[in-house]
Length: 598
Ligand code: GLY
Image (cartoon, rainbow, N blue to C red; front, side, top):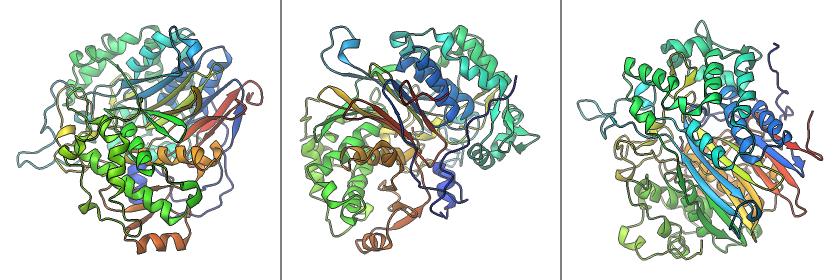
């Protein structure tokens, strides 16, 4: 069989020359330091259905399933399994994630309104995990122990999550949905520049694991763009999952993972795998203008802080201020600072700690925190504290309410799903004989109070390691509705930057009335309280704006692009518009009128 080729990456007309900071590359997987573009994403339109993901072959897999009559759930399952093969460094069956499922009233019994449900299939800490497992005998954090190798791996949830959502809401047979991924794994696909870049950054750790070395390198050297990568073990594993998804948790795949863990000092056992269960949760929802915004609840911090920042914006007419106006950037940066300060103290797995979601997302609390913001002067992060519990206690709920893929079908069912193996190539280890690249999600716990994780995020008691607990996430799949109708769905990868990327994509559509291609392309900024710095996308803001923000006391860092967002918007006339971030290599694929690509 010939190998699978995919269309050359779009947007070859580079408009801006970036300089790329090393830290940015290694942490957030932003674009490499060659000439890169913030040129406009390609806009795909369709009446019937749309799939957008971070890789053209994965989008094609989902498109194929929609064309065969599958619904959004079917297409999302096919796209996600394909991502596991063609973008294994980002996400896959060795990791976990979150999804939101939106269904219009006519598609479910006894349902009056557009319904949004959240499924948590994030990794969990193994039963043998302990609070201080990453500390040495001196009580210091053992460098990289939560990032590299078998001890860094959380119990994977992707297969269980996809199977669960399909079991309840899928239409086509499960085994059919894995076929594109099986083809990509067994026939191979062309490695891209992006794949090679990620691989080279993690080559040291990959070369230490014989299984990963065998699959992802040629005698220890990275595959190069245009090389065809075949993953035979993964193809076999996918065939097994196609026949029986439970084999990942109780069958021969589970046995292979547990054996590999035992042989290499990992903690995951057969018991851990057997007991893994995805959890349906209520999304966190709030109002912004006339829109209902629903996003992922804890154990992701994404939804809480997305709503918190939007609440702090409140009625301020950002549109009138202008998107790149220093006043706008300042207000949003100060709001981000407050939100991430609260994140460090209050957010964790709600099944283990009490997370004050209603208070943190209440408008009254947001109004109080807004008063702290001086529009003329940035407040140093050391002076911005998480809310005192007694202050937070006064606020009540006021409203009756790491790769991302977005799929919408003809009936306007939607899946907005973000999933991950955490760092690039996860823990850098493959369970022997399975082809499964395993995550390093344990690093998303606070390995010790105040010790920053891969993304510089700090946490405390609420996110301490406990057996079977879920590490705190920033993943922010979002669905927006208005008057009971779907308006948009979006999400992004990027660790701690996910929340602020999604925030800006949502504001770009709802507040700045951009089309979806403009919304995912527009330059971004990010603040996360600690470290105390305001990151601006290189080339995206005028010198005068940057100077003004410096004058107000912001510690400015210029970074190359980050985020790799994607989104689908329903236009006023009911059409679907989709776009993938031009910073990545993703693609939107429509079906039907003005959307089908042959
Ligand atoms: N692993 C990144 C996140 O979940 O936020």
